[in-house]
Image (cartoon, rainbow, N blue to C red; front, side):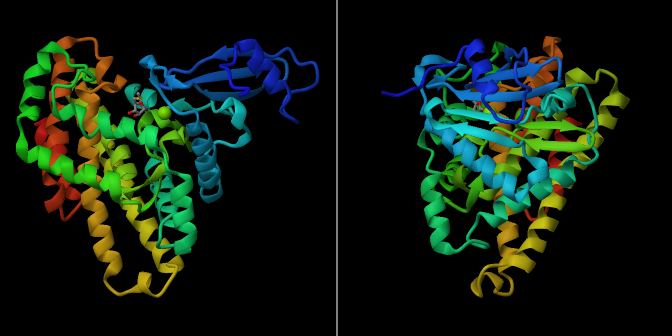
Length: 401
Ligand code: SR1
Ligand code: MG
């Protein structure tokens, strides 16, 4: 019989006590369930006397955001712990340390990062993170390059694709990102004041074609091991440190999906400045910082990715002259298209973002929502013709005028 059951706070303490070498014997541990994501339980275990702490993350057999009517496989805990291991080997300074994985309980024990904050919150507070673009560009380049056919033994890579088949979590993305926002789905959550904008998107056949083509890439292009949900809520940050968490949506897919996710979430905050920066000069200044960061993410990704390719390309065909330029040009287009899809879904799909939803002034929130939709739809429509990353910045600047 399965040992699985959702842990209580007291059981989480007992489990944490058994992790060797963390807490002193007899420590008076405290436990608090702090999960504010959509899917899992997260226990913060602390020992006030020694100052030591741990995080226990446990998958629930359903999507917490909806309830037991939406069952979800516990296998995602295995996928997450395995993805964390690979990301940790490739980027040890950019991932949390994992102390244990308990398959029967779908439980991962990891480093407590509460000296960092969730990046989405940091951006809402208008903090600046000078290292972020370089850190995330390196994370993206290393995790995507080294798990792809460019760097791996081709047979090993196929076996790795198999162990990251993640149908339940991919279905969430397929529905919530590539389907629901383009029709009057009951999963959507639409504020009445922007229903006209949603209806315009439902009627926009040119847009639907681009989304169908991007969805096809998500469904079929097993290019690299993706994080799969790389929004600013999956990043813990402080000015001198970046940590990428929560890769439970990991699967083999198109590289641009992860790069686009980072860019989309920076641009969602850019749109949200309608509410967070009422002063025009302050708004323009923080937006300039965000666009510099958006540009930096792509520049750092491309620089690192090309350097890795030049140094580590696995075989003769990967070193074919001209191949790298064509590959990167296609990555740019995928990145732009997926970034657009990731923006639209966060405005009126099932799961929104605090950068926009927490704006209290309804008129400012509506302006932010419409701006995010304008940028998102333009990115989607321009993806296949894009030749330079400058187009992303042009779209954002033009839409905000
Ligand atoms: C039902 S889960 C909703 C969203 O939360 C996750 O973070 C993913 O982005 C997913 O689409
Ligand atoms: Mg998550």
